Image (cartoon, helix red, strand yellow):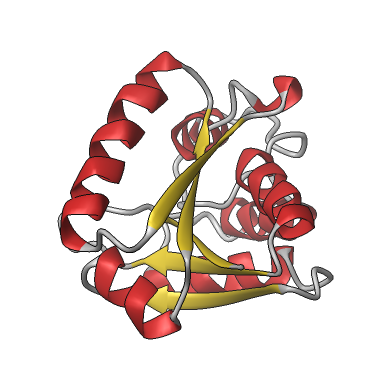
Length: 163
């Protein structure tokens, strides 16, 4: 079974990676869809987000990364995927993700949605938390893959971010 795991990944976190690694054990192929959503103001540009995700999953043989624009339902059909995988950290995530799953079902009723709960050690990690901790000079190394931590350190050393 081929599944799609989509998100903005601004940046990819260890929480995202937890979901990807677990999905890769269950499903034959996982396609990570890095979304370019013009309605979201992202910290990292689209090309950077795609590259950081690609590098973070480089050792996962059955995982590929694709940048997408437009509706997830259209992308899932283009990929000939069977399902969408979504991660859940808490009840608030469930309420939001359940609504998205219903929209997805309306747009592509042939596509199933699978929810994976976050592992306990990742339940508090979000891209928003990572960005805020980073902006205030906090340690993010235990929240993101090593390549993302290195990239953020480069941003800081270049003075590209006011911390």
